Image (cartoon, rainbow, N blue to C red; front, side, top):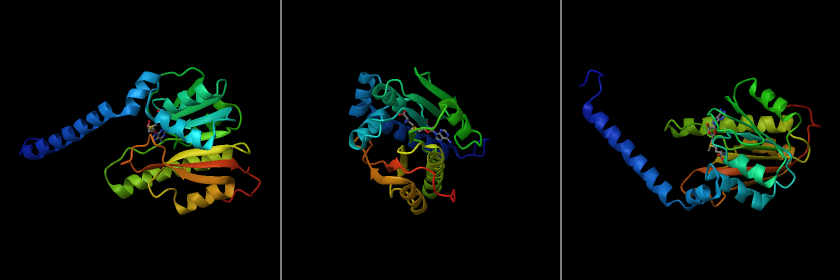
Length: 226
Ligand SMILES: C[S@@+](CC[C@H](N)C(=O)[O-])C[C@H]1O[C@@H](n2cnc3c(N)ncnc32)[C@H](O)[C@@H]1O
């Protein structure tokens, strides 16, 4: 045993495991055509293509003038929005710092903080017509915990969307395989004309991520019972 109380053999195994997974990640990055395209096209992330592909299929960017980007770092989605909707107001938030993006207001804070929704709404200066969420919780390796943490973020994003969107608006969010959970799906179906799930081609086949696309926000005429 070492002074840290850890068996050196254990440490070596963990380090080996970690370097094997880093090597796999690196090989995947090097061979990934979307990573190459993103570098050539000047996008900060390959995730940019996921939003572009979802938009090609669903067309939610066409009328977007006020957009909230939850989990904005490093900024690929907002780059796509700014490119396709020049002049749109865009406000983003992330736990991580984000290099400035022209025309985008960025908050470095936890979206789950009590004051976050108000800060976003204030910065936008009016109701959004598109709420995007690509937020994912950092995985801890325990499948159920990871699932619950990510679904918690999606639920908070959906609550924000239904309490701020202007009528006709849209909500697009990353969910996990198996789609949106029953209560969340019911909430979205109640408030939006259409709710669809999709896995864009740029989303890696092996990954458990899917996206929910809810369009045609019906407004807040109903009593706020959720
Ligand atoms: C997959 S990345 C987003 C990529 C981004 N859509 C792009 O195109 O560049 C997910 C982001 O969600 C952020 N995130 C996770 N939990 C968050 C929280 N509670 N508040 C704000 N951001 C969060 C992470 O820090 C991470 O940067």
